Image (cartoon, rainbow, N blue to C red):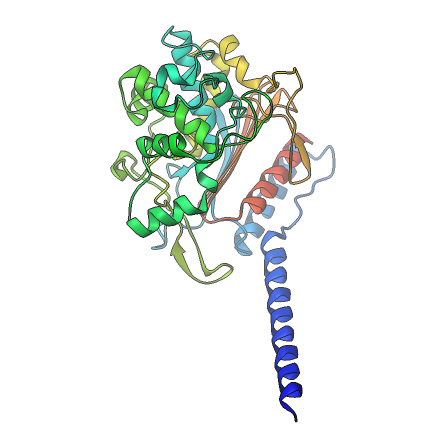
Length: 394
């Protein structure tokens, strides 16, 4: 065999291996998101419907398709809570009081804090960003509204790989001051003028949390604890980032995954050097506390319901156009931390590291569906939530 023939044979073998590896990866990915169907004939009596749901949850657990907690409530009363799997890599079981990183579900709470301060006359959502964070004078036209509505044009720190690499290399933690410095020095000009377009950017909600801190004179974590969570009785809810002590929560879930994506031992997949921040995420809550949160919003406990109703209005650009987003083949209309296209049903999704969440509230019926996972794939968690929502709507 000539050298050329040997080289061609090696290339062919490598190509076959690459194709086999790609095929295995696709197979594992599809297997990971494949779920048993949750079906029940229309008009099924409640006991039979409950039995069908229990059987489906049993199958999810048997197939290891879910690790977390699922809760269904009506009018503030829990009618089902199912805890499946472990809260950490040591196998500590998930319980009713286990708190999960809400990831982007946190944003609705950050928006609530801003609206609360506006209601108290401490700020206006029409305020320029520079009024509260003068270090960002290179963005003179951005307002608090633009941050709330993701129409600021600011860059997203969470998508900057160079920033993540630098933090890893220097063992540094990104803090609000560090983010402000990064934004102030960011070399590229904004892609659009504030209000001209919508672009979902985590930096917006970190800045909102910093505004809450500067206006209130408290850290964001302390403001949320003393002004929101404690008054509502949300005892398993707190801001937990890598600067905050984990002892704030009695039963915290830690994110984990398989070592080799879909196979292998469980390894920690939790907070990163980007997690010296909060507001865009890093609010932890139990499923039960999210039922309390729903009831407080509907009843206007801390903020009049008619004032908070602004959070359910679809975002409009400066030209009056309603913002629409395409996610997993669905058309969504964002509000302030909510998807509002199906009003009076509102939904919120979250994903960070191993955490993935689905939160659905029917404002007319007073029903709540919570799906929280600390070791899941976002698409699979969303699919579980959507199947449950469709089942409960029958």
